[in-house]
Image (cartoon, rainbow, N blue to C red; front, side):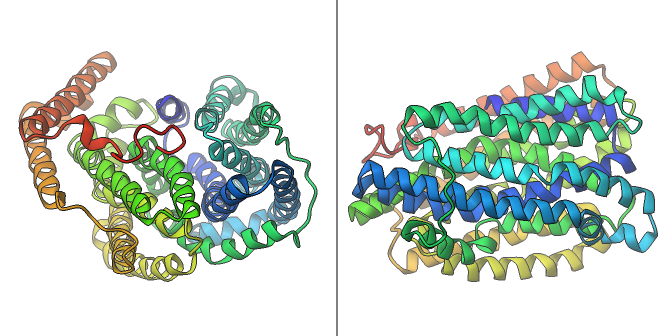
Length: 506
């Protein structure tokens, strides 16, 4: 929560200092490329392949064997990432041309050159943040969740410092943000090392791709590259297509995506972080009933908390954008355009979180092939929706296509787990859906009826906007919670009844 709130502060600072123009579009492209690869490799394929194998070693092998696995994985991963980072820096102009092809078509040489200049600084971030994800995976496997969860705070602090203090020192101020990204990668990795030392698992960085554990992780990673981060691939495709649209489209999508990522990060990432080690342990213990119950807990929590979050984002999209980002550099039109894409993204929020809960149901059983097939189907669906919706809805159509494809992805993941009898839903699900949707409808009605119109929000002062937003978010939460309480939903419905008392699970 601290990380996400500070992320909002970061984006507020960026919007007010840099606005939404060609230079910020260039930075977001330069940042999105390594950030996409981070989510694809480090938090995506690597994490889903590494954690189950690491948990198996932890539960069934000696500490010396576990330490050897950590050393060899760190060395192999670090060597591969060093080579990839070197190639990425050399190929920066080519990468920018590919991921912002619309700029090539329009002959925007200045934006391309600026993005390539910044990508040479931001690309090595992939090396350090991937090693950070590796360290976080080791800590999570040992139930040290707080340290990896706090680490992104350091990225936000570095970017805020770069925007407020370093930017005026540069001829092109936005370049300071690229330096901030690089520094943040180094700081985040080194921050976690003392905690690994306490576990006697300080990485020795000994490359050994033929080590039994390393080779298993590599085999599991290959098919997971597309499957686990399909949402991120879709978001990157949005950036490519958005480069063909009017200036500001990439920034509008970025700011709306950042708001959507707040509940996705607080709830979705938190659930994914704790559920994968928990499911891996249940699978290693040979307890299918506990495995199913853990999945059921994750899905139940997602619906009870994700549905009202999505509703609130959709109804209060313009007020949120205006309160956080409206300034001299981010005007009323930017608020309107970014709120359109935020509403489109909010429709898929529940699906985005469901994917983070359902996919570990496969990875914990070391099945990475099935999600690949599902992910490729979802990617094809996303591209189809993109082509259909981009013309009438512009950048908002890209966001809506991503949301729709996420529901396809989640539905296919659920069907596979249910068909294989890995997950058996309880009998209370129909009632839970009805109560949740009814409460969300009442909450939406109250917010639409009582909250000020978007025009009033834009014309109000900063402090009044902040006060209004806090008030109506509070009202929405109170209305939803009251409705659920009246209909019989209690806090115990958010507990994993079998595992709630065990600190090693959830």
